[in-house]
Length: 453
View (cartoon, rainbow, N blue to C red):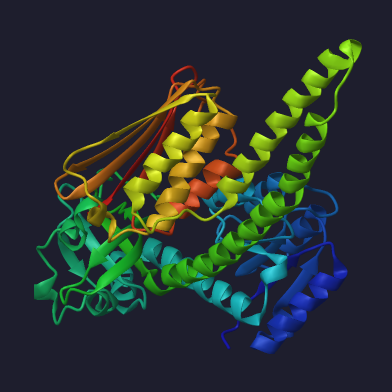
């Protein structure tokens, strides 16, 4: 095992001890592992110890949250930083990674395999970054020998200037001649052309659907970096995420199936349990003959009861899996008819004559319906909308579905996404759907979906 110096900044002694044991099991030298529990001690360590990797808990004895990262990063500017947290906080994790952290790991998911892989890639990226600064020749040696697929691109048109062996293997190219001179866009499917023309140094990773020379489909993460020595060229680091995404999709489908099963169970309990009790109560009330002084009160009770029966039925119906046996378009019409029947708002469905049920054969119609249903539910519950339009059209072999409401809208950058929007985005990412959610205060909300017919 490579001699790697590791600094653990953690005030939970038991967890720090567990980390040290795991690192030792992997093969790291225990004499190269130092553990401290505060920023003050971290500054003292700097005087005698220069770590290659720092495993950092954000909440320690004398510092808390993102401030902890900032202070440690200020002390060790060039060291690989891996943040360990007991909280699955998406907002914090995104901010930390944006600041330059190697990774954001949940303590509950940490094991020897995760630690080894994280440190391995952290060290690789750190080595890559430091050697780049030494000289162009050393940089090129590292470029060609890197196990990660890398391309040198001409900035103005993304044509490949040269690439390493790992990139040749990834794109199933037999030699440089099959890559050099091609635009990186040639490897993207139609909807995923590279749109960044002026990437910033250390730009955020982007996910794209690509095809190799042999026609194999890939899902890749591409990180673009400018070269300081050559203003006309950029480096593209390509990470094959195909198997990882497929695994996530498979995991999501299993969870979704379990979730739908629970929804079905709850819907059945609502209908057969609470729903039947409310119906029975309604029958009993109908048999009561109140005197004149009680009639108004009984009328109010009856109105509340009827409203409760409708709400329970609506809740049970919305929890049931959509019946798609008669097709997606039929299910959309039935959804609109049912909600229009409630009289709370109006849903207008506009389906182009060019769109037919068999156009939905290549998409996950179940997920598509749930996305549509979530958009409608959000408009009903939160947007204070009086009208929702559902437009389904077809253009250049693609189905375009737009759900628009005339509600109050919201500021995309200022309002934290609720569970409904998160569910929609997650379902979109797990399906062969290109989706976008747009909203502005006072201008309603629009959900646009696009997929191959």
